[in-house]
Image 1 (cartoon, rainbow, N blue to C red):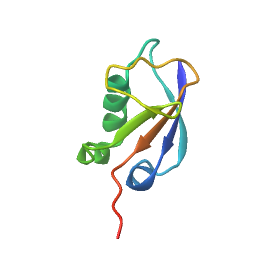
Image 2: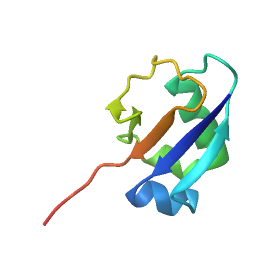
Image 3: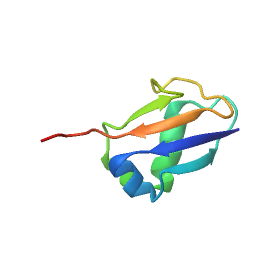
Length: 80
């Protein structure tokens, strides 16, 4: 299956792009996606607090992905 990945903030800098498609096995979970992304972009491992959202809703590590889902990588933000 193919999902669309949106990266924000430092995650965008690490991946080098805001939008990308990611191929995953059917019934992959957020945890599987996170592992694949860390393998491809090791710098993401330093962002332990990155949240992932599926189609606009924050998702747990056990959430199952579906073909054509949109997943957002949302790093911690700080303000001043």
